[in-house]
Length: 248
Image (cartoon, rainbow, N blue to C red; front, side, top):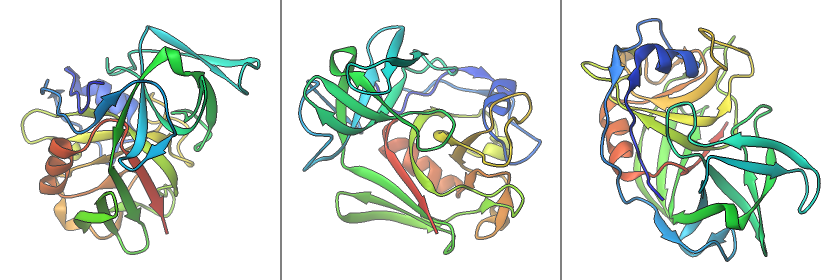
């Protein structure tokens, strides 16, 4: 599976798709080579192994999601996604030829079943935990904390919703990055307050910032802001599909 893929797109696309945390979105995003933060393997085994979480990458141009194993189709999801990145899901459970996965749709936390033959599996030992109350993130490699830092979260009227998510794409704004800083990871969740933003679906993100003084406060429209040093480290070390838990 290709991980940490940064695609080229117009800045309007970035603002259009993500919830956004300020009005001064960057002018463009630049292509970067993928990293090797996730390890590919055949589509079999449990949803979690000693190595950590399993990430399912769609093989074709679309995938059917079922309400139940071998049941009625729930929906069809296309790949690549709106950023041109291969669609991935975080695997919640593996049962024979079927995988239950977290879906990047409303409502947050939605799950569905897919056929294991329709995806390629990879695994990652990393996960990100974000504590809203403490304004802090921690990245774990298995049980070991490997990086921690401060965050900014959503304002009272546009809160950052708690829940279990995963990274869906990585984009890199050019220049100074504007409101999104050095990098922006899209999340599989959406704002509970903003059903749309700048014409887009109100997708959440973890991203850098051009206002580091706001880190440690409630300052965004729902996105999680971290320092540019921290988001750059994440971009180099974490795979698309990495689990993200927001709590507090």
